[in-house]
Amino acid sequence: MMKRLFGTDGIRELADPFFTDQELQKICLSIATYLNERNASKVVIGLDTRESGNRIVAKVAGCFRSLGYHVIQLGVIPTPAVAFLTKHYEADMGIMISASHNSFEYNGIKLFDRDGYKISDEAQQEIELIYRQGSDPNRQEEVTGGIIDDKAEEGQSYYVKYLKLSEEYNFNGLKIIMDCANGAAYKLAPKLFNELGAEVIAINAEPNGKNINHGGSLDVSKLQSEVLKHGAAVGVAFDGDADRLIAVDEMGQEIDGNQLLYLFAVRYVVENKECSSIVSTEMCNLGLVKSLKKLGVKVIQTSVGDRNVMFEILKTNSVLGGEPSGHIMFKNYSCTSDGMLAALKLVSTSQISCVPMSELKNEMIIYPQVINNIPYLGEWQFSSELTLLKEKIKSKLGDDGKIIIRKSGSEPVIRVMIESADIDLISEYMQQIQELIHCEKQYSVTINENR
Image (cartoon, rainbow, N blue to C red):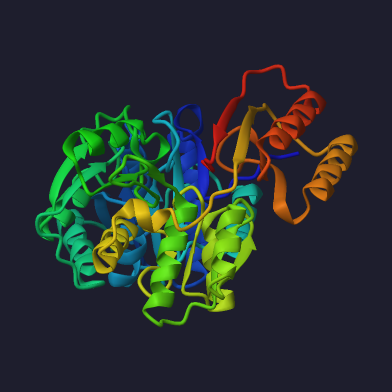
């Protein structure tokens, strides 16, 4: 079986050996062929801080320029900024060179349509079909009129201004610890909050090309200690391309994506704004579902991936959505998940309520949840025995628990998640699944963490 080009969130592979100049040209020609059928002429391109990014951007920008496109380069910038600026500059496609939360050895390509939304499954399939049919990788069509336009400083300024205008913010005297994961938000996030009056202490804000995603939303241990050390009101952590947010309250306790969604939904309800439903994924915590049900808010669950969440938000006319991993989407403000926007909304929510962050988040009960990430190589499919065991466990858990087994779309692992009010049951069922899969490799166990 031929491996798919697009995964859960765009194209993502090891930069070496996958993203060779020849492979990049083939991908760009496939995207351009798709765009040419829609009379496209302009693209914007951004990147995060990993060491392979500049080489990939140079090749992608050069390829589109040679095909006659007006290429706007945005420099190092968060993924949601690329989505926003695609629409702002009236481009036909936004291209973000990033592998999100993956380590520096990986890189990827995320694509946005002219309205700033991640491209649809149908668009991905069409581009992949063109790619499979085989554009000549040696083809280089020199077309007059193609230009490369550097709009990095201007674009970043537009994005920051937009975020500041999304609500009336005043963070004067507020101390915030900010973990930038040595990623795309390392300059803009501290700048934004400083300009709004906060005292920002930034950590992991010195990217060197290899330290992206050290700390950040994947590991908040340093953020927790820094919040306690400095007596900060809150800590916020982004991932490498800043489309995720995980926070830490003033007591040093983590606030994950489930709790963020709960806090934002409650704010909508308190402010008498329409919020009859929010969207999350099948990985969301049962505590979120049951806590919001008491407030009359339904949690609509969809497949994993922030693209799927946004599509479901639009389909159901919900105002809010997100994933436990920290992707948070506000339909009225952004076309994709935005870590910096979510951080703004979180801090302002605490200010408006005049209640410490720890008290706000503790209103929601979190069900114990365990995730095993089991490494695998090649293709993987459910066996009939595993399917039967999964259904047996699902039946026993009933409405007070759930089990999910799926292949990750962004990493070479099988994710097994079991949730129940009874932690002993989780351990028992996880052991049964482990024995059935017969995985001899080391696997990691994470509590209350959907990464």
